[in-house]
Length: 113
Length: 109
Image (cartoon, rainbow over all chains, first blue to last red):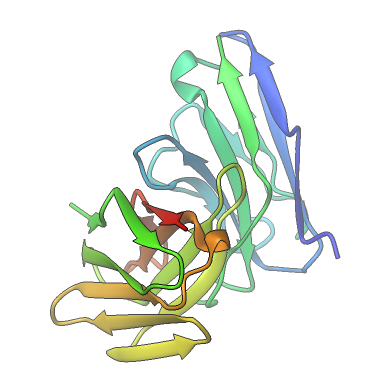
């Protein structure tokens, strides 16, 4: 069982370039989330989607966009990367917004130079 | 503002018991979660409390007091594999998780 997959595993990106982080889940979960994790800080929510076709802004949405064309996929796009977007990015999913557990993907380590 | 506080780092001995505390101030409360995260890996779910009291699951237990805005995670019979970060998170009135910075637990033989 794959659960949630993310790609790429890691990436070095030049500032000003665009990039899409991919996330796919095979659990048919309605809700999906993108977080960033930085040293000394808790996970911070970037964007979320409660169901296919809908998205919402989290705590730190600036510089990021998402789409949810179907249940399985939830890509995160950085339109013009900046060094402050250097972080580890985790995608997660849950059955619903009131579900008891979020399942996390393995993460993407992004470095913006 | 919303705030989750937990100690940055704790050290314990293999075979012993350790308690990791978490205090929170959030806009609304719809449950508290504990996750375990090994270095370089994704967080994995440990426990969920929505009512006051103790939830026990094997060697791990989690306690909640909503009136005090307080929870703790209790780990018994510590094993070296328990060396990890432990993340406290509260689901707020918007049903989004607010996360603490995590407690790094170091287990010594």
